[in-house]
Length: 287
Image 1 (cartoon, rainbow, N blue to C red):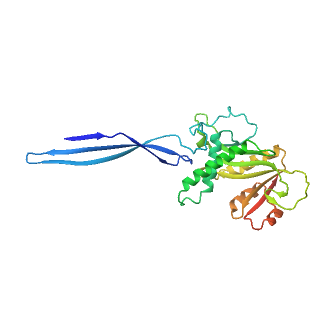
Image 2 (image 1 turned 90 degrees about the vertical axis):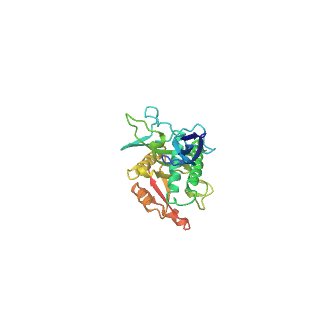
């Protein structure tokens, strides 16, 4: 004779990576217990009680931090070419570089930057928490800058996989690269972006482009995404009447230096000599 009793299910939530983004997946915990008894003519052997724990996955949409809009949907499909009316776009191979238009694209760009920032630090404690916090803050920064600031134009550029005829991708699985293009004026006292030196009290404003936060998803590298995004950014700056585009690159990042030099960037010797204690080089390309 055996008896099985099922207890009321409980729910557990814990972080689980999904498509490179923070995610929480619910598991349904079911407890089962039974009592087994055996009878014989001479004696009765009873009661060995055991418990069985079964966990069944239940998919759910990722839960985001409090600073993330409540209407952010990670199951949202990537908009089609017909839905997007954008003059500036650049197609290459299986990809398209263009300006980000959806909050979900901003978030994916922020997460790609978090992944890149923590890429070589995966063994650190609480690295997933740090990445989530980094991405959450970066997401809000991107949205704030894209709203516009006086005298500046900020664009978050993304590279997405080209849409397929018979299949629709979500935003998460579509965005594979990102960079920022900022068009602005030199501040008073600046000769080069971010570098203060003695300058004339009155000088004519100098408008320039500045590239930052270039990163590509690990699974999509070595397909020309970085160079083509840079090409698109340079051409976008040129169409806005900008004659020079700058970028800072770390002195130890040789692969990035080779990429920028390949795209026509040259080191600004005067700027580098001004910041001997800094660990970056300033590069510039003329459009």
